[in-house]
Length: 196
Image 1: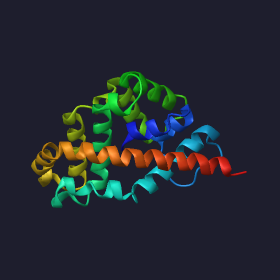
Image 2 (image 1 turned 90 degrees about the vertical axis):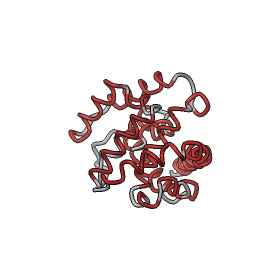
Image 3 (image 1 turned 45 degrees about the horizontal axis):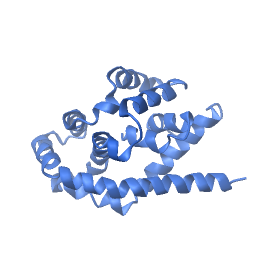
Image 4 (image 1 turned 180 degrees about the horizontal axis):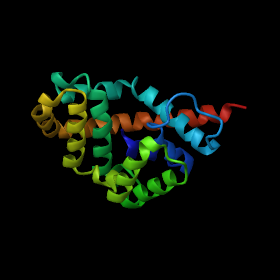
């Protein structure tokens, strides 16, 4: 879900960047016909997902969604991370946000997009959704749809309150786990380079 942050962590090349999005749509064993650069991107995406779920700095922010939303908190945090990143891009990113998001769409478009991802990719690119994550209302709307799908629709008002009351806390938490995720990515690159 946190496509902006995944793409940023994979910004070293188009295959890694594309894997930041496509990693949520390519499941199971990575087939031999996947281009090598995209394969690396998918592997990085999976590695980040596994490691982020173990990071105390990320797990420690789940409580900001309130007790009633503890179960879906990891999914919601992915979106909140993208919101904080986009909103504070000048502090955490490089260059213009819209230029980076366009480079993401271009990188993804170089590869065959699974049918399950095509419609969302087209919408994301057409509306520059990744840049619009800077608007809390956009992210909240997506979260509400997720909660309805997970049968937490009665928590909509609680979600809205928690997002606004904990805005400063979410921002402070992001600064910590953003560094941790960069360390995770750097370690992946080092390990990959050490493989013969």
